[in-house]
Every structure is written in C-alpha cells, then in structure tokens.
Image (cartoon, rainbow, N blue to C red):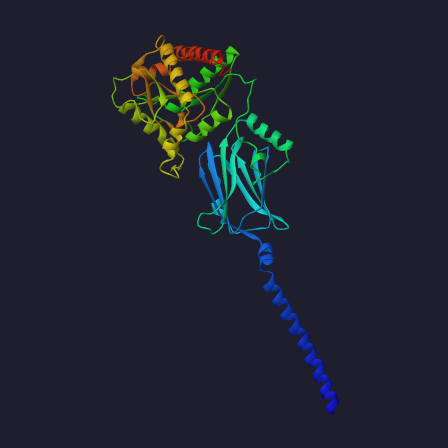
Length: 420
C-alpha cells in the first residue's frame, strides 16, 4: 500500500467520524434547546387513586405528576361516569381500585394512542356534584377530585339530556357545562314511600323469648303495609328489601334517595333487658338521644354494618357529625311532624310505651332530604309483644294505623305544595 492510498483511506475514515460527531453534537444541541417540548411530549403519570364515602356520597381522588387533560361524560345501562385521560401512563396499584360505597365497579386501562380511561359504575343512578382538577398544595403535582352522590333515574336522565345538548362530553375546566349539578323539578312526581324492613340475611336482628327472629317480623309487616298503601292507588311504594337479604345501612338510605322518597319508614322489633317494658315506639334522628334507652337502641341498630365480616369504619372520625349537620331543618321538621301524626294514629289501635316519640342518631334515618322515621313495633323480649307481632289481626291494625298516618302526612304535604 502506497502512502497516497493510506492517506486517502485515513481521510475517508476521519470524514465519517467527523460526520457522526457532528450529528451527535447537533442532536445534543437540539435536545438542550428544547427541554420544554420534550417535557410536554412525555406522558403524564397517574400515580395514585383513593376512594372514600358510602352508598349515598363518595369522593374519588386521582393523583398525577403534572396537570392532566381530561374529558368526562355519563353513560347509562348501567349508570357510569367515564373519564378520558390524554397522554397518560398508569402507575396505580390494582388493589386501590377496589369498589366501595356508591361505586360498585372501577375499570382503568389504556385505550391506545396515549389515552387512558377510568370508568366508575354506580349502584344505580348518581349525580356528579363536582369534578375538579386541582394543584396539590405542596406543589408536587395535580389531582382530580370527583364528588358523587346517590340520585334518582330522573335526575340522571336530566343530566344525560343536558350533556347531549352541550358537547356530548364535558371538559373538566368548563365548569359552566357540567352535568348533574342540582335537582330538577318533577311536576309528575307521586308521593313516594320507601319501607325499610330492618336487618336481613346474616343479620337476623333481635331474637324473641320463643325464638322469633326480628328480620322475619319486619319483612312480613313491611310487606303487609306495602300492600295497604299500594291499594290506595295514590302513592308509589318501594321496599329496600323484599327477600331475606343483607343490606348495609347506607344502602338503605341510598335506595330511598334514588327513589326520591317523600318518606322513609324503617321497621324494627327490638329486645330490652327489662321484661316488663312493651309497646310501640316512633323514633326520629337526632345528634343527641332523647334518653339512654334510645341511645342504646341506636347503638345496636347502627352495628348492623358489622355483619357479613364487614366492619365499617368512617374514613374520618367527623363523618357522622357531618352527616347529621347535612340534615336540612325542613326535612327534620317533616320527620318530626310525621312522627307526631304516627304516634297519634298508633295510639288508637296498638299499645305504646311511655313517651313513645323519641330520637337518637340512627344511621338509617340520616338522608339529608328524605323525612324518615324508625318504628319499633314492640319488644320481642316481652312475651305479649312477641305474640302480637305474630298475630295477623294485630299486624293488620298496626299497618292500617300507619297507612292512615301516611295519608294525613301526604295530604298535608300536597296542601303545602311540597309533595305528592
């Protein structure tokens, strides 16, 4: 090989190295000059998901490393909230997606082309009270906060209709275009009663001296009361359960709200250690019990959520107080009014205990917009009361008295323009 050949080959190799070096240098310069573009192109990371609440009201929070670009919309059959997350990578533990409360199903996955989708399926219809994208206070990222509450099919349908009239989907930052933000008038609504037979399923409730089980007494009585109310032809009547079924207390409240109930009547038959006490009692909700016996009863009934291996703990120790505070004064006034009317009607047909109108913090009575009472038909711990509760003639008289009280209450509400 001559010197000229060696020199020519060296130049060719050197030229290639120089070109590669220049390309690498240009790439480095381009990357250094465009950090913002690179950051914008990188996918967001969804890095946390939490749910809190019960079957009447839920909050869902989803965390991101940067501000998310989202769209959301409602679907029915079943009732669902769908949230699309643009340019988002999912880094969420699957166990955090376990449904609870008002949400009976959670699905989260990638749709392709960088879009991910969250689908929340409700236990029946619901309202989206609020859906916000918020910057974290410590400046480390952003979060989506979703507030949902139990609603009626009519309210859900109204939200769907509003959605169809706007854009068929709602961008989170467009607060004026949100759906499900409030009640819609319902001029065709008939006076609606929800009957709640206490206990059920693995939760048998109290047991009588002769083996009578409370859950059977309450279901039999509620069924008879439903038939009497339905026969009048003026009311819509529903039951929280019509079989031997376990229901959480918040699910009973949810059912009343989703039916837009004008009245919730929860039926029970308790026991007490003092054998001589007998007779019916009517309770309304209160943050302070009217007497120690009422408090003890509320404590026992509120333990129902511990059956089926399901110990329910509030996510916040103040939740119970907040729920009580949410009860509208008007709703509480209506509850007290019906309780007074009911005591008057029952006094003409069945025995009542002394001071039969009482109050305590019953969870099942805490719907903020449904007048509610809990009726203790009698005490299974008293042999005479137990016999009465099993007697068809007595049940018929008691059910008729409650039916008469409902008629008076519904008439008064209709006359005041507040129901029926």
